[in-house]
Every structure is written in structure tokens, then in C-alpha cells.
Image 1 (cartoon, helix red, strand yellow):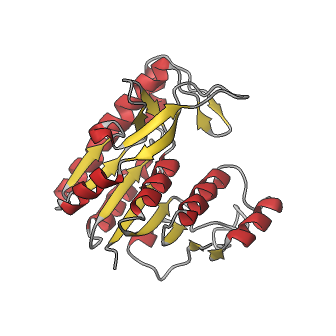
Image 2 (spheres, rainbow, N blue to C red):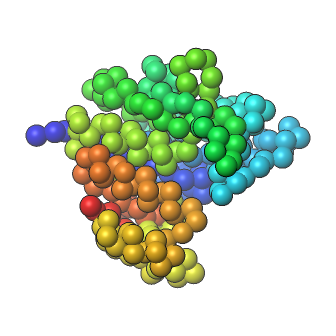
Length: 259
């Protein structure tokens, strides 16, 4: 029987709130067994960009990453945010190691091909070095990934953290029984974004297509669920979406995704 591993992705709104982030890291630190944390960037990259006189450009909710923006997000994601999270986990007796995709060649990517929109130095993932990542886990280290990858030619790339979480989960499904947990500010996937209690508790592939057709799932939730179902189709055992209490307390409402 495969050993279990839990992969938790935390969103920017959690990172923006120091008290909430501390609570989430407490829950994550005390999760039993192998685990991996992936984090987004929050508002800090935008704040730092503004201080540097850069005007962030977003298209369809995704950051356009020119050369200067790449420098900024690398400093913030891989430096300030990642190392602060690692330090906080160490204070909670969780032996974390902060990583980008370039470290140990763990996430190989390529610069996004330009079709209608040029996203600059945005990265799309080609391969996860799952064997090496599994070795980190076997050493009882807790990998903490930020949203930076590389193209094996010396170029760093800005890569969506939801996608990193899904791709790592899928790659590890060969070795592990993987549970993928997406934590953000909502209680799960909602029938109405204006009603926090309107959680859709179970979504399978057929229901997902219908919800998308009815435009109940739209905007930023679309790519998140696309990543989730891609992971399930590649062997991930379970995908959950909910607010941060989902990490430790399963008595509340949340969304479970199934094939």
C-alpha cells in the first residue's frame, strides 16, 4: 500500500493576514505524516513593485511578468515570503525546506508560448522531479514551494501556484496516496459568491461541466478546478477545496472533487 502524503496550497489572502497565516501554519505543522506546502504571492509583490516604480499588469487575473516584474516576484516569493514561512514552520517544530522549481531541478518549465496574449516570463510546467522530491520526504523534510520555476537554461519563470500544487500532486501519485488541499478565503466552491454558506459539497466531472455551462463556476475558480480535475485524472486520490479550517477540522462544509 502506498504511503500517504498531503499537499496543501495556501492562497494570497491567507498570506496577507499575519494572524490567519500563523493559524494556518500551526494547523499545517501539526498534520501527521509526509506533507508539502505550496504558497502564492499575496499582495506583497504588488506593494514592492509599486515601491520600485513598477505598475503591475494583470490580464484575466494573471500577472504579466516582464523582466523587472520577474526580479520583483522572485525577490518576494522565493525570498521574503518563502523564508518567512519556513522560519515560522521551524518555530513550530516542523522541519521545512524552502524551494523554488530551480532547486534540485525539481520543477522544469518553459516560457509560455505567445498566442493571443504575451504573459512575458510566465512558466508552464514540463516535468516534476518526483523521485528527488520523494527523497526529501523520506528524509522527513517538509518542502515549501513558492511560485517560481526555471527552464534549465538559466531563466527563472513565474508559475501559477495552483498549477504547481496540482502538478506536484499528480507526479507524486505514482509513489504516494496523495490528498491535495486548496485553502483560500471561501468555504469551498459556492453556488453564489455572495452567499458563503452556499457550498457545493461534491463535484464530479459531469457536474463540473454543468456548473461551468451555467456560469456558476467562472473567473478565477475556473483554472483552479481545471487544475484539480487534471490532478484527479492523473491518479491523485482526493482533492478538497475550502477555508483554512479544512486542514485540521473536517466538521465544517467544504468541497470534495471526484472523477
